[in-house]
Length: 99
Image (cartoon, rainbow, N blue to C red):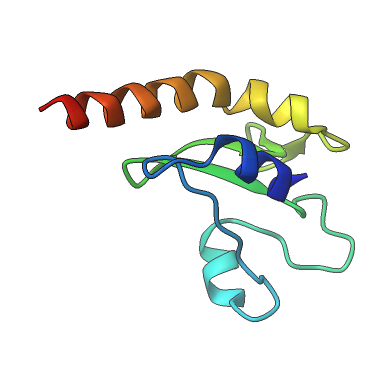
């Protein structure tokens, strides 16, 4: 699903990446991911804008609990506003070409 979303939405300003949480455990922990075998926080998708986290699936609830699970590509598009972000990314790229 993530590869499909990346193929559809990636631009020079909107990028997708993956983190091997088994290899980069400290980074995963810094991101607040539970690495246990039955973790409800994996898989996780995190959206950053200018270096700041702006959205996450599964959602974080109040006291560090998690909500969600079983999400689809449509859920990701909606939660991360990918249609709007993609359009804005293309508009900014066009604006730079015009200059």
